[in-house]
Structure formats: structure tokens, C-alpha cells
Image (cartoon, rainbow, N blue to C red; front, side, top):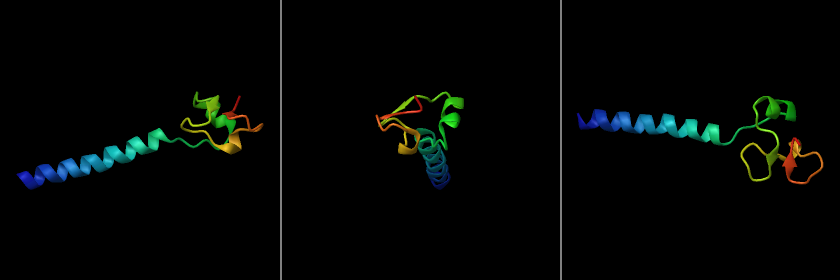
Length: 63
């Protein structure tokens, strides 16, 4: 019984932990994708910010 509980707890932690990581750091191929997701503009330091989205280099992507 204890082994079954531990197995479920470990498996659940792995599944939920992986999902949280994926949701916390999105990747946008371009600004159109960021806008479609409702994420633009993206400031430097925020999840989803990438230098290829910041054309003028001011720290704000997809403005």
C-alpha cells in the first residue's frame, strides 16, 4: 500500500513538474506567434522574451 502511494506521488510530481516548466517558459518563433498568444509586448526578463523578437534592442520584444 505504501509503495503504491509513493509510486503515484512520484509519478504525479514528475508529470506536474514537467507541465509547470513548459508553461512557465514559452517560446515564440516570431512576433506574430506572440501576438496570437496574447503575450506581446514581452519585456526582457519575462517568460517568452528572446532577443530575436526585440528588433531594436530596447528590452521590449514585439512592440
